[in-house]
Image 1: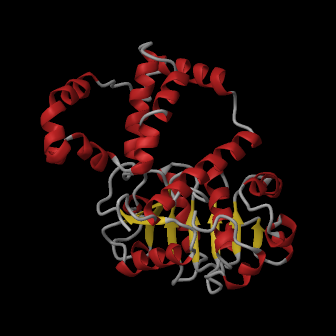
Image 2: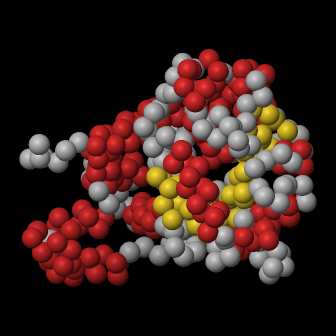
Image 3: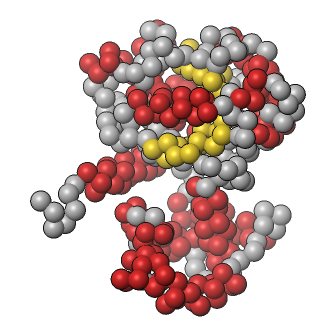
Length: 339
């Protein structure tokens, strides 16, 4: 990111001292977002999760995501200084918040109940964010009256995991979200100076954009494993050796435009459009209701990598930071041949 290790002195000049953020749900996404807010803003952060071991969970996992060389970002200092407050009730967690960010289970009834509970205790001016992976904001508040003002305040703020490193933030307003809410969240992430790239998605759809692309690729990968075309580990290496480096430099439209030579995308589609169509017709159509393929995918993944531990997380984050840094260097450098 732009500033992956803010110095301790920079903590006094970090933005958003006027905000108070509440995170609801401290799973993988919630913990990562907690690290992001604590590292790049000066806002106090309240957290709530009904799990009984919440403090132990935060104490063991959060340090993996925080810069290790900033004393003010130790768990004990964050707690004693009031930058981080762990709550045992939802009502106390949201009462003083200016931003409520929810990242609970991907269940529409859960999210609707959560927002109903939140709205009983939160300030009427608080900004409402959901970091859902695929449930649109309009559905999350569809149980409220059509003229309920909360409908204007909620939008999806969807990251790509882990959000304390990955630059993408998909902003997905509902048809009733006020434009000012979209501007507020854009301003929030822009001021962080963390390298995040908030992108507005113009229409609600299942999975939004990043996950739609990712999940479709994942389905085909699982299909290929199920058919015995390649193993899980082999497919991972194929992606790392081809699509990974290519798409780290440019997305599919720009990259495939190169494939058409001087005619760009038109040339590409004209040259190999028939081959593309044959692959599309042959693509796998497995679903989550089919149990047969899951055992193969789980077994091969576990055999290749085991279950992820602390060192695996550190290695992943180091690699992601390195790739993002290279992206920023590519964008910041003069093009070859330019002065």
